[in-house]
Length: 115
Length: 115
Image 1 (tube, chains in turn brown, blue):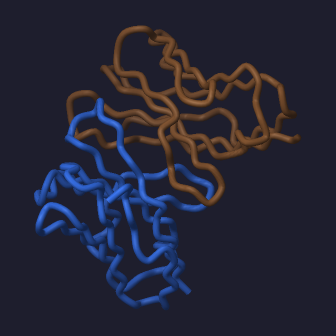
Image 2 (cartoon, rainbow over the protein chains, first blue to last red):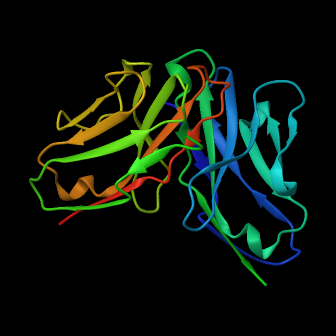
């Protein structure tokens, strides 16, 4: 079965530190890749997505992610985090040809940014 | 509407009670998904509708779970004879079409607590 693995459950950073959250998936076929963010008390929101083309994708609020097909990875990065980035981050995969676009999520990474 | 709306936001049920959770997708969205998110975990797929047709119910954990979308808009997730392991946040998402390269928009979820 397909799965998504996020390496860090809880990350604590100071403001202005750089961020990298790891995400690996297990599926040999073509996938679509997503990062969703959930701010405290809010719903899941799309941060960025990769469907095809340039493997380096840029999202909202200065986030970017790089798809490395050979490593089955889609790591999220931000050069300088802010206190307002405190949230839970979910990596997700959908299989390109089936199942209507249902998402397979990782277990999430909680990011705490200290002011 | 402006976003995906779910009701109630919170539900406490006694073990053995039946519950019904409602989802109002974004107007015009063809696809509708239900996910279950246990504490500390990522969302897990339950079921998928394209218009009124339930095309995938592979994620429903038991025959106590039932979902419907009779007119292709509002959807209801029903859980019969609730058990403690059903305690979770139930998320609804909708998208414009049933393909993997489409952004899904999430509601805020219904937090179900079974006591």
